[in-house]
Image (cartoon, rainbow, N blue to C red; front, side, top):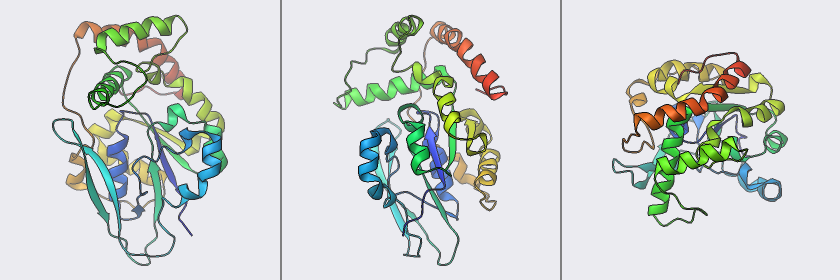
Length: 274
């Protein structure tokens, strides 16, 4: 028998989900999923129904079976993807839980499907300043395009792409890079399927500036023993090389997102610390 996941970091993309998952897996009572991002529930109901047993097998067994290793995709300082083996020491008789992180789930998956198979799962969301998130997302797709991946669309320069998207969204359409940062559009549906106590939201800034405090809150949420991470929290995973946009474009995007951010804050009853 396999351990069923107790937690699920569902996104959002480019908001720090990789770092958060590695931090959680470092906890002595947490075992990893075999894949960093199974992206399982975004495949749709037919695929999920047909392959649910294979999904359960991605998680550790309930019985002790020695140490666990998994392959971790990481970016080097030049932004080039490589893979490293991560080993987790499993101690006989210790109580463990497991979980996964698939950052596309929040935006692409049907929450009703997740609730069908994981009704008691504790969901974790990371939100990031939507301007910065869009910029990082665009840079990722530029790397994918340079690697020769088939995206289904052409990525040009950031300013051209997002100014076109702003016009499309203002006319009732959507954009590949900006729409995911309008978080409330998806959040309302998730909250309709999962009660408030099963969905915790943090910001990328909170994780970056106060990582131990953020992990303390998450450990409490997951009923995990307190653990002091020390210097391990100084490591930021899947971090691309630094880049920047013009101040004018940043201000225009900030203004574009402002009404959406205000609605999000009203829905949550809290200010977002971007």
